[in-house]
Amino acid sequence: MKRFLDVYCQVLSALMALLLAIMVVLVFGNVVLRYGFHSGITFSEEVSRWLFVWLTFMGAVVALHQNAHMTLGEVVSALSPKAQRICHLIALALMLWVTYLILTGSWAQTVINLDNAAPVTGWSQAWFYGVGVFFGISSGVILLMDFWDSIRNFNSPMTTPQPSSHAE
Image 1: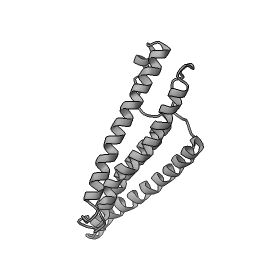
Image 2: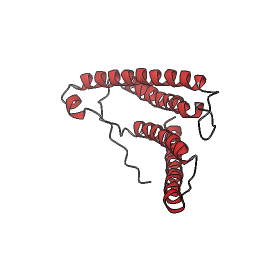
Image 3: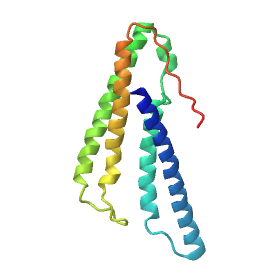
Image 4: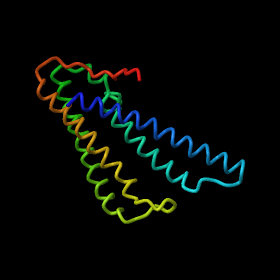
């Protein structure tokens, strides 16, 4: 499963690069057209905003998988190994709870907005709110795997997760 998540996050990273490139083209092209030719790309602002939201949530999933999120390392390192493990499990449980809240709230908003069209593109607003569903499922799987590994290895020495340094 870890190998699957590694490949999944590599695909997300490539997709994020593509979304960022599309955003740059849309926004820069719109600026050039507006100031140089007094016209513009009508849907540029709306699509760029949606891509930015998706890009942010995809980046959060990749950062979670790579342990690149913020921690309280100095505080936790002052505790005994058993207390560190307990704090880690509590933190994972809290993150799972928040992920559940994001997932259920996003699912409700996605369903509510299925028939609501975006003002410019006319696309379903469910695509905008669906990013929370994507995030909730993706981060939930990562957190559950980490929680399971932490419980399974509860009595082994705890190693502080280090951010991955992938040269991509």
